[in-house]
Every structure is written in C-alpha cells, then in structure tokens.
Amino acid sequence: MVFSFDTTYKQLDSDLYSIVTPKRIADPEVLVLNEGLCADLGLDTAKLNAQILAGQDPPEEPIAQAYAGHQYGSFTNLGDGRAMILGEYVHDGERYDIQLKGSGRTPYSGRGDGNATVSSMLREYLYSYAMQSLNIKTSRSMAVVETDEAVERRRTEPGAILVRVMNSHIRYGTFQYVANQASDELQRFTDYVIDRHYPKLRQRDRTYLEFFDAVMQSSIEMVVDWLRVGFVHGVMNTDNMSIDGETFDYGPCAFMNYYDEETVFSSIDKHGRYAFGNQRPILRWNLRRFAEALQPLCTQSALTYDELEIKLDEFEDRFDAHYYTMMQKKLGINADGEKALVDEFVEWLRKSNADYTNAFLELETPGTFDDPMFATAKFEQLREQLATVGLDDTLMQEANPRYVPRNHLVEEALDEYLETGELSKFKMLLTVLETPYTSKDIGSQFQQPPPREFDADYTTYCNT
Image (cartoon, rainbow, N blue to C red):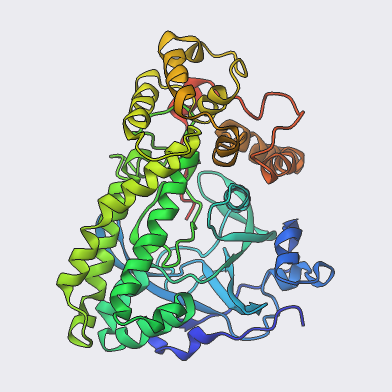
C-alpha cells in the first residue's frame, strides 16, 4: 500500500470533523507530480497512480475538518467545503496531512459544489512550489489530477484535484471553532496541538502561555518572509492562518511587482484589508482573535488572559526586530543599527514605485536592468550610502531571489493549458522557480515585470 496512515485527529471529539467520501471519478489523469516531494516522503512514484491520488480507493475513511474564522472581519462557522484529509502519513518520525482539495461535497459545503477548476489547482501547485523554493515554510503540492467533469466558475473548465501536504491543517480558526462550539474540549484539543506541533513546550512551566508565544513567533516569521519576497497572500482570514506557521491556501494570491503597499490583487478584497502593506497589522488582529479563542483555558488552567495580553503587546517590537533583520540582509548589511537606512530605501521604493524584486538585484550588480528608475540620482546616492555599511554579496544572494512568479507569466502558462492542453510554459516556470536564487542563462523574460497597466488591472479569484 502506498500510503499507510495513522490519523490521530480522529481521536478527538467527533464534533471537530466529519467522515467523508471522495467523489467518484471515472477517468482521472495526473497532470503534474512533484517527484521531489515524493522522494522527501519516501514514496514510490511508480505506485502513485491517478486512482490513488484522486482518493478512489482510500486505505481508511477520510475526514473533513470543522473550523470557524473571521472572514474579512466577520465571524462564521466553517469547515472543509471542498477538501478531505485522506489521513496522517508518518515518515522519518514526522507527521503530515495528505489532503485532497476539490474532491467533492462535504457536510460543510453549504451551497458549494465541492469542486475545483484545473487552473486554480495548477496555480496552487505552482505557488506552493515557488514558496518552498524561496525557503518559506509552506504547504506543498504533491500532484494535480484532472477529473472527468466540467466545473463552472468565471468560465467553464475541466475539474481537478490538488493533493496537498501539510504538517497539519489546524488553524487559528480551528481554535475559534472549539472555543465556540465545544469549549469543554479546548484544553484537550490544545494539549493535542502542543504534543503534535510544539512538543518541547511540555518541558516548560507555563505551557499554554508558551504555546501562544510560539504560535505568534512562527506567524511573525512567516509574514516577514512574505514581505521579503513581495508576496501578497490575499485572504488572511483567521481560518487561513496555520497554527504551525505554514503558508497555505493559494487562492487570490500573487507577487507584487511595482512597489506599492496598497497592492491588492484579490477580486473580493474591495477595501484593501489584505493589501501587501496591511499583512503586518492584520497578523496582529488575527493573533488577538486567537488569544480570545484561548480565553476559556483561563478558567481551566493557571493561564490568565492578562498574560496573553502582555505577550500580544510584544508583537510590534518582535515584528520590528525580524523585519529589520530581514531588510538589512536584503541590503547586504551585516550589522544592526541601520534602521534609518532601511527606512530611507523603503521610502524610495514608495516614491519611485520601482520593481521590488529587481531593485535589490540592481543594488547588488549595477547595470543589470535597463530601467530608468535605477538611473536616478537618488538611487545612486542610496547605493553609495549602502556601500559603506552593506552590499554584502553573500547576504544579498541569500535574501533576494532572482526569480519570482511574475503574474503575466503565470497567466500565460495557465491559459496555454486551457487553450491547447499543453503544459510547456507551466513546466518551464517550475524549472526556473526550482532554484530562484541562482541566475540562469534563459533570457530576461523571467526577470522582467509585466507592463504597469497589466498589474493595474490584474485580478485573482478564490475559485470556490
């Protein structure tokens, strides 16, 4: 048997999940298979056929998880409406959820059809692949399997299933659900999560307080990494915030090209709640909701809500510390105390609206790009200032990717498949993004941003 599962989530209260059955698919087809991920998990790719990857003969009963969340600020009870966890797979002592996305209706589907379009699943595969290569903690995509149905969203497309791998799919919103629907289970559930994700905390005196602290820390590190590469998640609802600091749910996400902290690509984010520059304050807002979900523990243990508040009050200083350390590395500064110079460079980015990725590469190697933004007196002045304290090649090459998923190239690759059934552009993007910190002799198109008018109108969708 390819997968041998040990699904501990089923040991929890049955109100936290439902037993489900993947939809039947007559003729599934594997479009892409992540052989590197399969090797990491010790899986034999020769045995991973389309039937197995589409969940047609699961070794145990899959589950859909219940959770809640603040979606654009409004609280609601939710759950896996088009996703199912096949089981928990254990390899080399590590535990992973193997999940199918787009595998059919569940008790939490509401009016949804439980399906996914092939373009949205290929998009998630590509973005999670890129984020892994960018050294950002992320869900990973094992495969995209095309189904034998038509799925209607903005247009009618073939359906598809994504096979997603995560340390777990437990999120802030799972805690919100337990606190609101089964508060008597909160302590047991929290103990389960600590044992699964933060077992070393069992050796600490104030385990629950340290747990909140560890979740905050992992989330800060995740969002600072987003800011490092210009990533806009697009839907930072509390149900999309991993308890383990894994980036996941690549729906209306994209990479910012021209620097603008108000950058929004999501079709449903009408007021810029989850804009590039708002990801930091939204993380704090989400952490406060997470702290509120832990509040029932204050009557069940020695934890007090005042302690959680005090921890949350550390957020700004801790985020600042990680942010400025990250930005100094991007500028090649191998010392502390250059916050003012970081701020001056970011202010230049704001005013110039320059390409975010290429600006740092141009600092590193002048003349790389024929862009008038990099020929200004102010840019040269900043480079001269940085030369006295930074521009360390080693630091910059580790922090600054040469390649990110450029929005227009992603759309070209997806359109090629929908129009011709070919994946040549998609696979070429994967090849480029496999080693994004290494320059390649492949022409300049993978480093060039799209025309400004393209990004001005570019829109991404949840596709639910």
